[in-house]
Length: 104
Length: 256
Image (cartoon, rainbow over all chains, first blue to last red; front, side, top):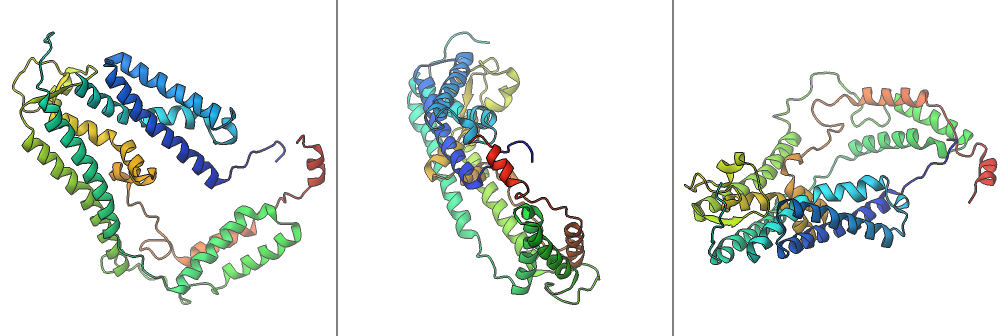
């Protein structure tokens, strides 16, 4: 144990993740509604989703993590940026299809 | 491929799209509540069995967390655990016989577990099948929506079920595909409504449930005395490194 090792407290990490997931869920649904209202089609819709989620994550890192995600998550890059995007895309597609169909 | 737009009746949205979504959400919530109701209370465990398990847990925690102890404390505990693990003091039933394991079908404990599993699976598949049948029966035979993104022609047979227009663009889909989109995309909705994302996970990923860890009493599990012996051997060869070794140097050297 020569070099420093960050020790995480499980329940806190879990709580942080819950909060992040809540933000992701709200954002993927609202982005879906937005994309439907804007009547985005095919490629533009997915670009919109990726951009929107990334912007959300950056905002989350800046506001909730005070710019230091490493202190709040074990694998900040993967947990904050990748997991949310790929696990919530189905919800986004659902809202997108629904609102697109309603608006058209 | 047909380049022109189809004109869809706006009433379709209110009488097909929204009802399907609402029904799926409500049935999902209902399902999670019914599953909760059907779950039988956990049975009380025999205290000796519990003690055996707890002692094993204690030994494991000692093995994993031994670095917080000083040298003397470590040695005392090491000796204690080795003697206790080697004796039969903490066994649930003292005379462990090495006969064949009990038949899992006659054992009441495993029958209960099987029943639980069957209930869980039934609660997963029956509502799904019912909704799918309902969608197929009520809303069959017409196009309800246009997807906002193009998909390949290979999905045609699935997504345009019951529509006899062979050249129709695949982006126009029938109600069953809205059902599938809902099936996959409702997880965030559930977790927002129930305020609990793990319950929503359970609701959506129905396949991955019921993976209870086999513990000491389970049929087919290794015998208690073997586990205890192995644990004793592990503790015997445990090399001890205390976090207090050279702590003064480290604290003084740390740039806080």
